Length: 273
Image (tube, rainbow, N blue to C red; front, side, top):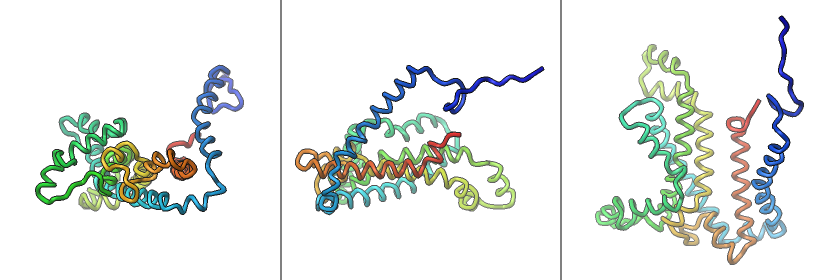
């Protein structure tokens, strides 16, 4: 009995080539996605790059964005990795509901997230009011509010990525380490974290990029005060009215950062065989 092989079409990864109409629609979809990026690249004032990039508004927004996004990343790692470990390793009543709440900011409209932050940490918020009465400290419309907003929207990306990585770690390695007498912290440090590093690095990159590009929750909870709470996305929003060239430049910088993150993660999320 002879074996038969399904015919393949040159230029396709596997299977039968899609209909031409599907290819045309796919190319149209690609055009819709790429054309705005091309337009931004073309409209960026390259001749004035040096002058615009040293503009005080741009420098202040860039500095605040970098500092706040890195701070949000640090908070997300300290709090998000243990939470991902809990989701991946423990079962408890209501776990699906709790997990859904933890990743809800990924799909929540950012402005709604900002309103929620005001309701929680505002001067009359659940936490903000007793904090202000006890210490006189108010969080909204401060640089700290920028970090809180960025952490709120970015941490779920780290949690999801790290939890997925934890589920792929071979549990037999942990069992073997426990059999040899290693305690939980040693197993976590010497076995789990090294195996988890690719997922952790990917989650950190996604988390940082999301924090860097945060807009809605930040402008609602922290405001848009130049030199104090104005990050790069907020500067784009403001400069688009009074200095479009600066807005295009800042937008291109954010675009370049996003492309760099995707390129860095291509082997994990975009690699196909």
